[in-house]
Image (cartoon, rainbow, N blue to C red; front, side, top):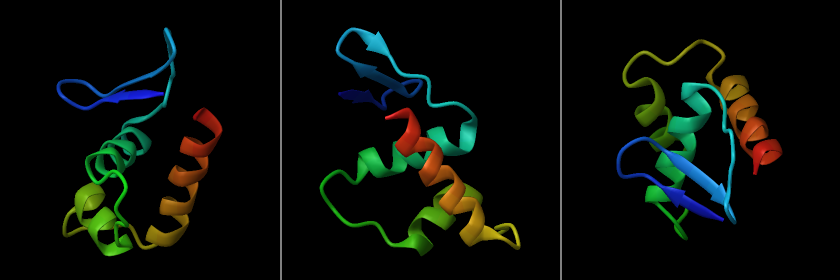
Length: 73
């Protein structure tokens, strides 16, 4: 699997493009790819995805986006 983060996020499995879906899961994957092979704290992910205005159900939203990524990848 190859993930390109320079320019628009691109994910390829071999020669096949992988559809990650909506912007938030795509942003989550980009942040995780930029921190490859290193743990990323949830607070860091929240800051990248929502800045200073996270939703009230931020934990549920994060779980949902991780689930979307797992299915896609």
